[in-house]
Image (cartoon, rainbow, N blue to C red; front, side):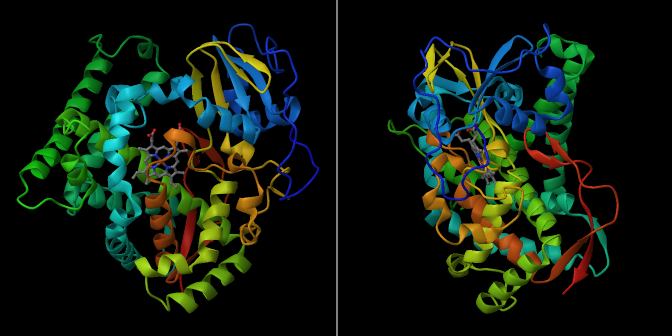
Length: 463
Ligand code: HEM
């Protein structure tokens, strides 16, 4: 139960362990047909937080016909993500984009997923991704050089463009803005149409039914695939293998010496672009949103940057020398986790915290809820990077803080994202600061990631 005892130090809060495992966890009843769908739609983040506050560490409710549990104790989260991982698959939400992403790492399961993960993992070794530091630094400098003092921009849009450019360069070795636009445009069309399906009656029909909307989506997907297949063909015919991620995936071989097929490469490459760039852009967007309201934190960052970097955008040797920068990013992802919810579906009847988990139950785990748990974080609504500087990460349970998920399906791009975020924060922050433009308070728009509704308009101030 989320309660107000203890702060930043209490790893041993209780979870139910003695109930007969035939019992269902407590929770609200909801309406007959929709369950809690109405409340969920109205305000997803508050809904999850209130459920945990009212009903405790494991809550049961219904979304339409689905039985859903919300697990909020670190030990329960660890059991689902790690100990019992083989008895769960991704939840229904993660399958929505399967028509485009196919069997990419985010959407695949079982032995196929394991093979693909093993094939992809070496490309994400720290020693390999360090090669991308100069690219990240250069593209950051290029983006900042286009800004001017007093200019009004949406920081979310700016960071999305920058991380997209970095993703396309590191993934496909794409440099040309026209080429980037072709890819982004093709992808955006498909995703807008697919998301639109969710809210239309046509969305109930499978994609292969030739309605005008479905035909448009299929055309969009074919176009997107032809664009990506072009990059794969180019990668295959290179005389010397490139260092971009796609080239590394092309060169990878499984235990039987087999490479990925073109289709597998296409699905993995699109997955990496989608999973990687928006999440990192959001880390930066929310970090700057918080920094704009905490000048004392910004001052400390500037002091660290001035001592270590002296105005330079960070290089590889600098990254281990920026503990305060690291604490700021860690704390920004605690307060505004870019991925605020992960979900799993039980493959068989299971047990969790002394309760029954019938086959097919969806288990949600929300970083938004966990990262605000006062058992582990004192004054959880406060943005206080200092809390991470005295070993808090070692004192709290492993799954009190999990912006990158955990267990076998932990984010493959974690080191990549942290490296990129530190470079962008320091590269941008030494040259500009942001003041939030007056207007209504920024609202959150929790989709798959935690977006700011309508962006965050700011004015750039040259330092
Ligand atoms: C701050 C940035 C990022 C955050 C917060 C983040 C968060 C996450 C989370 C929470 C998961 C687990 C989802 C689940 O368990 O259902 C995940 C998985 C994944 N992420 Fe990230 N991610 C970030 C950046 C990246 C980057 C840069 C890449 C690639 C370049 C990437 C690629 C992936 C992939 C492929 C998976 C699926 C892994 C698997 O299931 O084997 N992510 N990410």
